[in-house]
Amino acid sequence: MSVAAWLALRDLSVHRRQAMSLGAVFAIAVTAFVALGSYRQALLRDYRPAREDQLVIQETQSFGEFYGSRLSPDVAVVLEDLGITGAVAEIHTIVGTSFQDAVLLKGVDLERYPELDPFVIRAGRGLQPGDSPRRAMIGARLAERLEAAPGDTIRLRGRAFEVIGIFETGSYTENEAWIPLAGAQELLGWGPDVSLYVVPDDGRLTPGEQILDGVSVGRRGELWSTFPRQWEGLMTLIGTVTQAIGLAAALSLAAMLWRLAWRRRRQIAVLRSLGFSRRVFAMYLVVQGASVAFVGGACGVLGALALLRWVRPTLAGVSLRPYPTAALLISTGAWLGFLTLLSFVVPVWVLGRRRVAELMSGD
Image: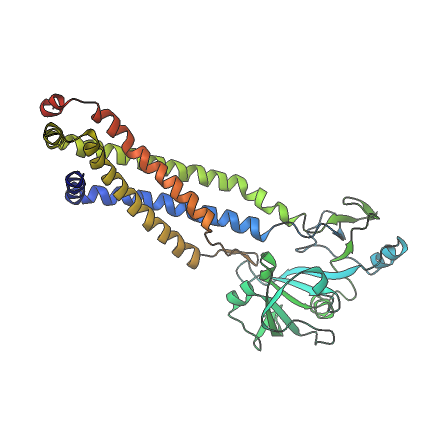
């Protein structure tokens, strides 16, 4: 076995350019596989459904939990007439001059906002009743993008806001800047208007119901929980291309192993005539296939980690923070193992069936 392994590694070193080229193809396929899986998991994690016991009152056909909805205080009066108590007003919009510097802005009720969105303060403190309208707490991803810390000043729509805290939620809301509701109304020039009202789902209202002309009820978080499904078609297409690249790499490696083994057929035949079993011949191919595939795969995983660390796309104020999980790395290893098996099983089966005489005399 050791002789076959030594001979296999020696042949790879002689044909190192071919081996490195095929290893690079495996690395590209694994990089794409890990990166794609990480981005898919990030989408599912960031846009998971919100609490099912809450509804939002917003403008019909609007993206109220992002932007585009504006309601007058009359809506709050209508809700009271319907017997709805505990409605919490919020403002949601996007500020900035371009997609690159866009910031998700959220105006919150200083008394009630901790009840609606669970968060953890990582630095500084949260907003409190009585805080100045020009104070803000920002999500960890926004803080990273703006390179801001508690005590720093950020500008929203040209006006300065003091950062008093940095929070984490484990979702896309880490891209938001939360400011007092009064500060958001002043910043936008909305007066007493708000974007939406959050109300408890106590059975009095149903999603899709229209309570006023142009004002309807929706499930909180239902809109942005559909985002992963909207991206699924593109993810599937990229995944198919990735699988095709991996399959092409495995078939190309199989062809290279075939050629190398055929060139060494007489040496293998001599070993077999001396009493070595067909397993020696199989070991020759297995060592070569595994060396190329798994070295390329390891480089691919490292490449994916570097890619995910340094390339974090931001669009309209929302950035993803993908990272590979243990389950994803295990599935990557299984996929790479399948490609490795595919690369040497055919040459082993075909050439292993040939008799010693055929290997000695074959052209």
